[in-house]
Amino acid sequence: MADQSSDNVDKISSEMEAVSVSSTQASSSSAGLQMSEEAEKRYRIVRSIGEECIQEEELKNLLAKKAAPICYDGFEPSGRMHIAQGVMKVINVNKMTSAGCRVKIWIADWFAQLNNKMGGDLKKIRVVGEYFQEIWKAAGMDNDKVEFLWSSEEINSKADKYWPLVMDIARKNKLPRILRCVQIMGRSETDELSAAQILYPCMQCADIFFLEADICQLGMDQRKVNVLAREYCDDIKRKNKPIILSHHMLPGLQQGQEKMSKSDPLSAIFMEDEEAEVNVKIKKAYCPPKIVQGNPCLEYIKYIILPWFDEFTVERNEEYGGNKTYKTFEDIATEYESGELHPGDLKKGLMNALNKILQPVRDHFKTDARAKNLLKQIKAYRVTR
Image (tube, rainbow, N blue to C red; front, side, top):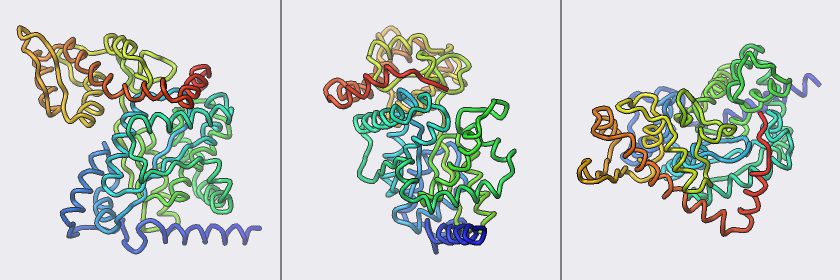
């Protein structure tokens, strides 16, 4: 058995070396690389998604030499969808596809079960995954170059490829290194973890190679496991490392909330929230006058409203400055910091913009029988951690 396992791992290593950019050697230095105008344009689009990119030179090299790179994104089906999972995902995926990327969205149903989401009930997890797809469709995700893959189905169909890879990653890493990755599950190293939650990071690391990803396009909270994948490339002497493109994490709407919380309804806008619910949540949101740093309302404008509309409009009486449309976040921040833009006017503009974005989703879940039934089931589920 030992010889057979070794053969499997060697085979996987050689297969992984062959996939992705193959002979382009994307991780080699691209100093002096001549990029065409089209490749430069693609790079600017893709790079705009990430708060951090590891490494930019590798991304330039990849886009210069590969017409349709594979971009991996994934999610645990775990309850109602908030706006960061919904609108930000649509914005980022549509940017990737416009730049010629093929996007593989990993519906991590087995991972949700390992992490005890929806009480570990796979039937409920399946319903949530289908609900997520309905939202993205209604919100305008370009599905032509997007492939939705259920982890349970893909792993079961290619178990001989997947599990030796997971085992090899586990064998090549010490337990403390794996524990540093538990942040990807919304956990900390000091939590009392189940054995399943130790297995989880090894599996997520394996997903990157299993899906033949050139680019890992996930949130900053997933950074540690993506770095683990690059370290694994060093272990197996693979030159072509997955490029990490980590997007910004939107904070919760209340003061001091680093992330949105599905267990705190006031911390997040959900994708099918009614107009009145959106308005109440924004009215109650933390938005201190003249303070830009750590202001969730301004973050919503920067990362959702401006990328969606390419502008942000404030409506107010002439005596308070009249209506004004901003084209850049810098202009908004400058006027807000000076006091020229009042929190009440900013919140009103934010409410109007958010409701315009969400209206097609609301309409879909009211008029489409399947979507309506999925949402009814989701709302009846108890969110578990």
